[in-house]
Amino acid sequence: AQSVTQLGSHVSVSEGALVLLRCNYSSSVPPYLFWYVQYPNQGLQLLLKYTTGATLVKGINGFEAEFKKSETSFHLTKPSAHMSDAAEYFCAVSANDYKLSFGAGTTVTVRA
Amino acid sequence: GAVVSQHPSRVICKSGTSVKIECRSLDFQATTMFWYRQFPKKSLMLMATSNEGSKATYEQGVEKDKFLINHASLTLSTLTVTSAHPEDSSFYICSAWTLGDYGYTFGSGTRLTVV
Image (cartoon, rainbow over all chains, first blue to last red; front, side, top):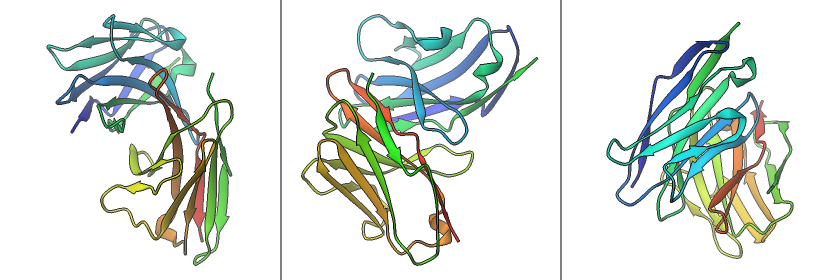
């Protein structure tokens, strides 16, 4: 079985500042890892994913994440926050049963 | 890219009636569809997994007789909430899984309100 822990249910950043969202996972098999963004009353949009290969993954809208097996982490970063980044972010993991397990989510607010 | 169309986006129904939610994969074949429920300010809870042409597999604690899932074709999966009650009010989201790029494509969600 796999699980995800997102540290910090709420992150507030200034516009232009670094965004850092933390995600730790547990999995008994090599995991596939995902970050999704959700705007109010909408579905989930994929930001990026790690399956195999390069551990630094670049996604859409300037986001990137690094898979660190030794730390069982997959933290999401963006160098410079924009007002449009205000949303809910979910880290998720899947293993060989293809089911996605989601973290509790992190709400990002961006201060002008 | 892959698109999953989910309808309706919002529905209000009376207690005791049934509501059907549809998810269609528009430009790809979805052999597997996942159905989630999301409570306000909460994460997604997997309700069931459906594979085309076979019975859905429900997660523990999910009433299969209340939440009927049909996946009759490779492009259409439906969730029917039967005899709905106010406690069934929630945000329901479908997700299609494709092996090719190991990706999950989410529908835009359905806000169900039972009055």
